[in-house]
Image (cartoon, rainbow, N blue to C red; front, side, top):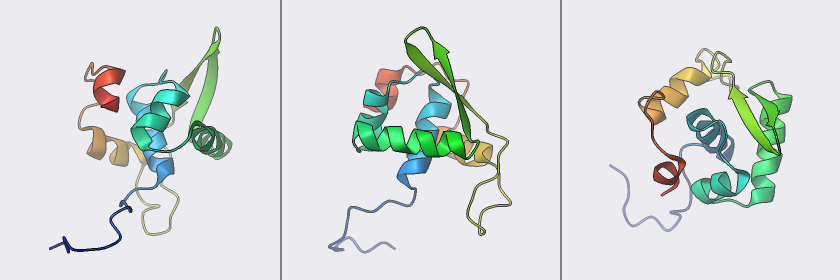
Amino acid sequence: MPDKNSKNENWTFLTNHSHVLICLAKSASMRIRDIAKAVGITERAVMHIIADLDKAGYIDRVKDGRCNVYQTHLDCNLRHPLEAHRKIAGLVSFICEDLDDEETEEEFID
């Protein structure tokens, strides 16, 4: 059972990279500002993470007018050796339950 009196309560089990990837998988056209709010990091940090994910082949950026739309490659393997036998799709579906839900970005952020 977790220690409720723990002094370090700022950590989470998933990284900011996974949080951003989950946001993009859930809403491909989610704005950087909204991702930053949902994850709890700065917009600049989101931009760096998106660049990392793009460079590693986990997402593709597609311009749609002045906006970016992100294609998430759910068939890619997770990176760490302990979980490299699993696909991104497994992580995303575990967290999001059902990607086909028509949940709005506002519901996802709040």
